[in-house]
Amino acid sequence: MNAPRKAGSKTKSVNYEHHSRSWVFDAFVPILGLLTGFVGSIYSSNIRDAFPFASNTWGMKIISSNISVSASIFWILLITFVVSLAIQQFQRYMRRKVDQDTLTKQITDLKSVLGTMPPVDFMDALSKAIQDCDNYVTEQKAISEYPIPEGDDDTKRAIVLARDRRNQARFILSNMIALANQWDNTLISGPHGAIYRGNIMLFRSREELAKLNNFEASNLFSHTKFIVASDAKTAFESVDGILDLDLLMTYRDTELHRIM
Image (cartoon, rainbow, N blue to C red):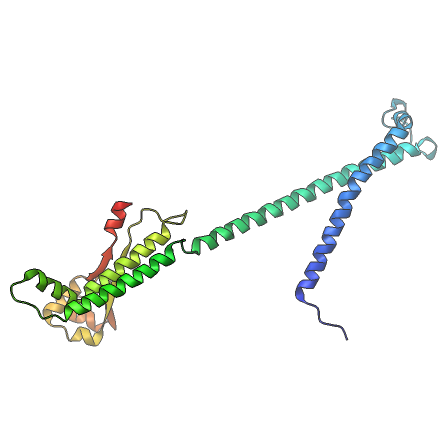
């Protein structure tokens, strides 16, 4: 019973045989060149007196009696050497081209891998951003539990702001955008100098849209861009729901862009 062979074993065997043949051929060409030169130096006088160097042989009919064996051997060796040398140089050119293409692909793959890796200090920045967001949300939650005082406008605004969860969403968005900016700016390909925006969109179902009063429905319908209808009621009845962008839950990295 024959033992199973791995798929890669045949490929390795073929590569080994190819390299073996290439090594033998590379060794054969210079040896053939030395042999050609040796024969040419030994039988130089015979070669010089034979075709094509001897002008008296140009019009002669080629028969066995006027063929120089030593000159014929030299010319056969020389032609074989020239052809072999041309084949060798072509093979070397193809090997260099394959190696260059392989190296270029490896460099491209390496750039792609490096481009998807986080910057050296990104994990520290990510950890700090998570901690900052957690501290901010905890702090805002604690502030929101205070009763709104009378007369102190600053404290009143702080408590009202803390009770608005959209403000916390903006803070988290600002940290996410800062992280994205830090990641992208380490890439050679950029995008450098880009302006980053983040937002949270709320899905309003058809049932929720039906509960809106006329003013709320008209206000929402006024900034919908992809619904063609004459009025809000007709528009909202024709969809399963819409994504509503709340401007208070958007953030743009204006400050980061100005610094860059």
